Length: 342
Image (cartoon, rainbow, N blue to C red; front, top):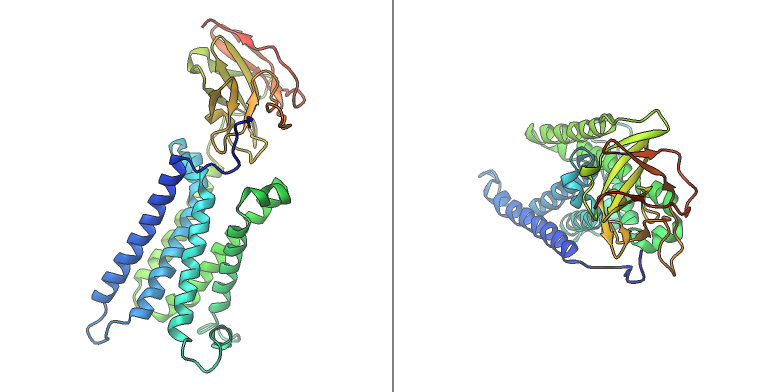
């Protein structure tokens, strides 16, 4: 992070990301509402309320699944990393669509009930002692509450207030929300229709998500065993850019070239573990591609008045290849840059 860093920066990329996402959600809802009425069986008149419930519900479920797929997809194909950088925006919009689903349920089924809508929703079905007809509404409510909590705490204020480890564990609750949503659909919409298409879509989405996570988890990564690691040819490191060197599970270093100098620091940004090796050198500092945090090349320290520090690494050059000492120096340790031919 440099002295020019702004805590909230609505860059053009962020605006385009959000605009495309919102436009996609609106297009899905409008198409579903239009086609849903036309595809309604002739013996049953168009039911606008229930179609809206299905439109919002299916959209929220698909968005939730895609939110969970972004991480493994980006790991399998780095070209998809832009989707990962603003995933929190994706989660907030998913929560808003899920809230729209809940609102349409209350408005359609309980708007004219003698009891308050929320009370009617919670007491509509209490058949807890039978499998068929088992209440599905509590699972949907629980999933929505989890998503609301994650959306509310998605801002960087909560990241700093809760500390990154706690914040990360809290936001892993998205997996619980997805599981609850699957149960909600399985006990609700899945049992109220004779059309097998919904069951096929539900099973396919769950299977695809599990397969992606397994594939990303077991993606082969060459892990070094010696103290010095061959980081590849010098020519592969472009000026102003970096390369990532895996050192151990969950640990990697980033080697950057700045003109005729090479420097290496931890690949994990102190802000939110962003991949520094995918960033670039700006104003003589390594700049995180996620949120713009910056660190000096020579000692891994953020420029004053900021105090973040990262571990540094020693480098050497042999036969045109860059070698990195996998034994990290303490955070903030100055290391003389490795001079190379410009």
